[in-house]
Length: 275
Length: 275
Image (cartoon, rainbow over all chains, first blue to last red; front, side):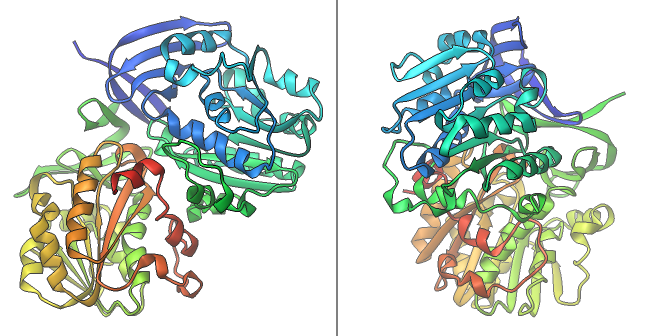
């Protein structure tokens, strides 16, 4: 018997992966959660039918979420990750020595539980003493914590289900206030092939709040179109003005100091979305 | 009834696209050729079950094959395209005013015929008077034409079927000799996620022949992993030394002068393949 998992990334296009089997499949309080064992990409976390992370390609998303913003801020001591219950972004955040505390606020405790159990390569640092894990609503957390964080990372699912509020203007307002006076935030903002309107809208909304707004890309094979965007909003520090010769050497598989600049150079059709 | 086309990009991973129907499906002298009408990406040319080009995303591959090499050569008058019977690379080549003649050598005349019929946006320039179309073997053509071309582009299928010789060292030797003394060539060299060994081997082989070898990437959603590599071999001109402020303004949707440099900045795991 051959088992194949298929994600319809749009109504009429998707990816399909042969699997050895299913490790978890349950309905949590927030979403359908599954961990499946694919042959090509290893174990895969699937939420509401959408690929969240795989053992083989997770490094791209997690490195590219964490490092551009953290290397832009000159002294990132207090970092908040909203969502990201698989722990991959936290693992990358901890590679930055100035970080004293990384707070993770994940709404679905089951994501944390099963990631620790089945994705230890990704979730392994969630018990690190520099990490504080809160099972709760990131939207509420940022509105209850003013002027607290140097860097905030929004590692959300798509803007459906539990993450829908994480793409609203009120959320960016909250992030602005939760950041210190030279704070910076980054959010995953989907792909330009199928979600151009989303990228355009987020860019517009973030520009109303932050003086510096930058978009960059990375290649993630298991995400729709393989081209993912991240949007940075910053109060003071510009990721394009970083002196990359001074970037601390950390172990990575995707990010490099040279890519820190090159990732912001967008294909023309992506750049045109932001005009 | 729902019809879906699925390409297994590896034995255990692939893409799947809902289609309106099939326009052509026949066995030519060289390969299985199909043109199908997908809803997400428009008409799609499929050879031996592998996606070659689609109306919606073809611009990425064709622009990124043509422009980096052509803007690296200071006076590209004579250009050869090996393969590329869909005409997309030729269309981009003709945007360069110095080009006096672009020769296309495609082994399978049926690819040209059906591309003209069903993919006119891509193939529309094949009848341009600056273009000479030869239905024949590119491997033979380059060995019969010494010191003739300024730029050679290898727009081949995967190294199976009719294109297998286009990834051999003898072919690169032939290209070297078919190029003038300051000639440059570029080849599509597949993706680093599933074909790392191929990229490594091509890089090694091309380095034995050419003093300047560079690899760059582009995002192509319908190609395996979404991340495609191109390898340049050059006798004299280095694509990294181009003064991008002097690049002629041409209409593009992916390529930009800034991307000319940024596309060569590789993710760490890709760069590591080439060491």
